[in-house]
Length: 245
Image 1: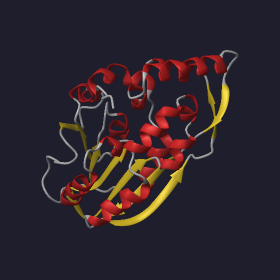
Image 2: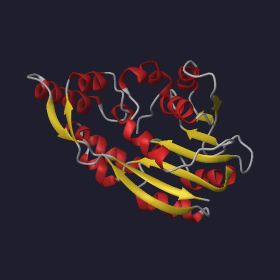
Image 3: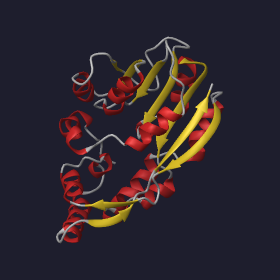
Image 4: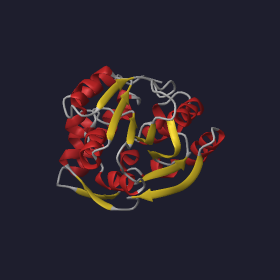
């Protein structure tokens, strides 16, 4: 399998990826903010969610990412946030420090989610919450990107742990399941020129993992479908898996 160079992707990331406002609202709905609240965004990328989280909550927010390129972009957005270069399986923070930890569309990049949850439990305060924002294997199949690039669904179902695997590893490390919330699934959206631009820039990481023949074939299908204007598709949505220590 090919590897993704996130330092290169960081140069175009903000041009092709936007904050998912519904996800952010769901994250905020699941936590209580008070004086002294500490929040960690694991796999913060260029800091889109991290920036909004700090501005909305006023909490002490940290962003962790393994890519210097991503963090360089993130640091330009908000000087109130502490951005740290690091590994989710070896969190560079003291025990019982964070009130809330979240990660958005990141867990499939983690090499050892059992070790990750061990580390999350260690740095999370008693009573603290964790939210893993991801997609189930069913939702991966529902992506309209999977329609145009079928190979991406095969690859991503190998990369993404399904919901049951996430729950198993979290509970193995003493985190208690609170809820699994599905948002956005089946919502009708328009797919147009912006999507073509996103695909042309390979703004989705899985497009870097398929063969060039499959990529070019899918790109031709998209251009043909959208040549006469936007098309309607249904969103695959996202799954928010909530835990508590």
